[in-house]
Amino acid sequence: MLNNNHLLKVLTASLSVRIVLWVFISVIVIETIILIPSLIRRENELLSQLKDISSASVSAIMQLAEPSTPDDELLGKLSKLRMYYGIVGGVLYQIDGEKIGTFGEEPELAFVDIKTNSETQLLNRNESRYDIALTVSRQQEKFIFVGRLDSLSVKQELYAFFWRIAGLVFIISVFVTAGAWIALNPIVVSPILRLRSDLIKAGDAISNDQNTEQFYSTSVKRRDELGDVIAAFNQMYQQITDAIRHRKNAEKELQISFQRLEAYSGILNKELEKGQQIQRNFLPDKPPQIQGLEISAFFKAAHQLSGDFYDVVELPRGCVGFVVADVCDKGVGAALFMALFRSLIRVYSGYADLEGLATQGHTQPCGRIVPVSEGQTSNIFPPNALKAVELTNDYVAINHGDLVMFATLFFGILDPTTGSLSYINAGHEPLLVITPSGGVKAQLRPTGPAIGIDPRVQFGFEQIYLERGDILLGYTDGVSEAINSEGSFYTVEKLLSLLQKGATSAAELTDRIVHAIESHTGEAEQHDDITLLAIRRTQSKEQASDSEVTS
Image (tube, rainbow, N blue to C red; front, side):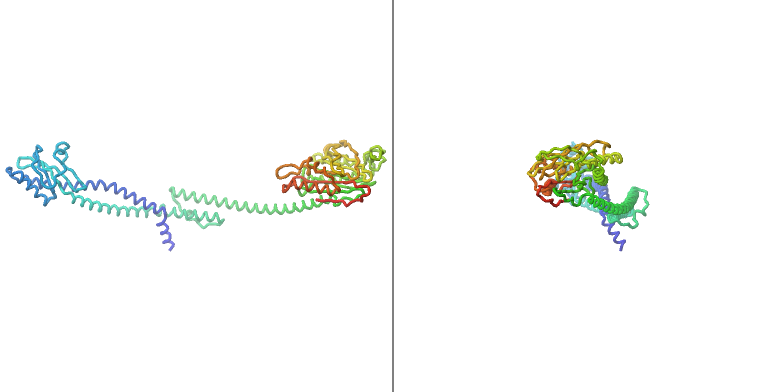
């Protein structure tokens, strides 16, 4: 059954059909080229035979005729040939061309053609007529006889000859074609069909990622061009299978690496989450409630770990210390230095205030400034706790200066009772003092460089007075540089314009700023940490409100 199916495929294959057709047509064409001259030669033979018979008959009659036989009687004897030898007509001429007479059909071959063009025969195939010119003798007298012969028998014989030869040609063509097909089938057709089958199997195996059975072509050893093709196929398939095997091995190794990376990434994310929780724990969960002050803060990190921080701490003698800072860079490094800066500021500010490391002879608890509206004056002294900025700068610059990690920082000390604010702005964005009715009445610009760059640098300090109802707003550059999907920044100018409207509380102000930033950025990715700290000095009869932290 399998052999029958294979034979059927071979017989019906396009290549087999094309080979058979080409061989058959080629043999037919060759035999036809040979047949045409054979037909012409056979026609000439038959016409020659017809001419010879007619010539012999006419010559016999002329030789038997007496010299005294009249011309009419002579023509009458010649006309009797029409009944026996296929002569259907004729013309008898004297040797000089004088026409003696005619009988039957008059030939198309005229004496002038014979004399001028030396034509002795003329064949009319359409009418099956053959004209011949003969020179005949009656005793010693010569004549020219032009006879018209019926060549229908020649045509019929020629047709019969043609069909015999054509049949023979057809039989030869069939045998030659069959022989060629039988010879080419095992040599060319069958190997090509099997190679095609191997190619289909190989393609299916590659596309389905499966192993293949032994190919037929691998068992064939040939030293011809088809053998080269089969060898090239085997080589190509081997290269493809090797490449697939290497790819699978690489995919397995990549999968293992990916699983390890996923596990490591999970561990890293957990550690980052822990770091984020620890870092958030560094920030005030809820700023202290201090009589005479309302504090509101907002913090939003751009990534898991942040370089921004703020802090509010109660200092001895009733003062409040607060910090707004931005560590350079982002990520783990910035987060670690954020913790370091915060810890140093906290430790040094409390230590300096307790131990009196600032200017000697200072008698004011936090440094004082007499309100102008009360008409009082006093000398200005820097609070002891401000010394923490210099100590922090020196420590970081000396011990970690090679890491080039610095921070911009605003450190202020506020006396809630008097509104006295002493501060150092170490390269940070200016803090803004906003009146109850709206508008910025003061910008607390930098008084020194960023901390952590140069040891033993001197930081200047300033003192101002916050009136009741004033709000002190601190922020990091994540506010002014908040960017939307079109690449446009929020800018300080938009922030200042927003502050033209007064705020009844610090929380109202931070909420308004956060809403404006979110409206500006929309769905755009946050690129930098955002920190806001608002401190409002309440009215004299106003109780300390609950402080608020949002994130």
